[in-house]
Image 1 (cartoon, rainbow, N blue to C red):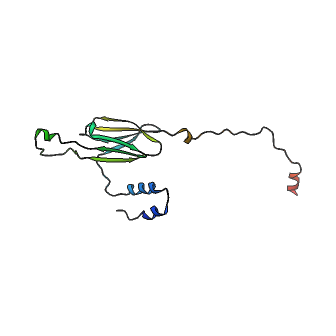
Image 2: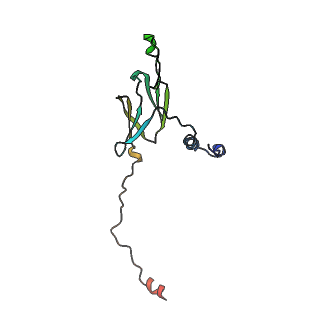
Image 3: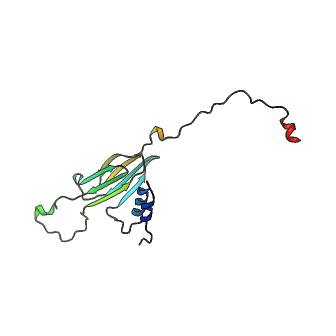
Length: 158
């Protein structure tokens, strides 16, 4: 249970609302655990999110990237067992709808998504624009030596 309130910060700051929203999400109780997922680093600027979506068909999954949020949704269509008029005695395979959202850093874009063996893989890459990359600035200097004023050392010693 959270014992602090971030509401006063919303009123007294401008431009930090996203930061405080992230803090609210990070400290929220009852974080959903379905479906389980992994986040892997596959290269210096490459990442992969793997979500366990066994039982979901390709048409039942959707991936939306909007601004800095990646949302993965899964919704089951009508139960396949209804077609056969069979009765399920025990349901151990989760078939409930889900929505999982991930906050992406600046300049992270989705490159690819694939469904393999019940795992949905979403490949991400951080592409920093040239204007934001560090660059070397050449330093120019004159070849001439600075003039030495005679008698300065003598005055300082006195």
